[in-house]
Length: 98
Image (cartoon, rainbow, N blue to C red; front, top):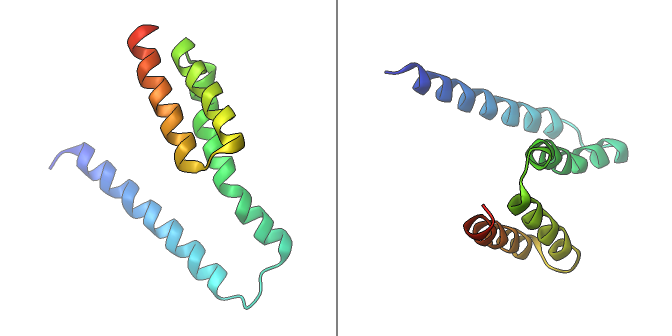
């Protein structure tokens, strides 16, 4: 088997173990401190920011248009509407803008 396969497999196992490990640690507590809960609730936004920020800094006009439309839709619509609007604008803008 190729090296790429083993790298992907090792990444999958590491991801699984970190998720299960976190769940096992948190499940040992009867009640979670509000600050810990607030911190855990902030994790998805922090991860999303680390994925979007580098892409936005090196983005072209099509990506910026999709980002702006997504931000506007996020003010009124739900998560799926935001995703679909951003993806649609990105696809169309890449066809015409480049």
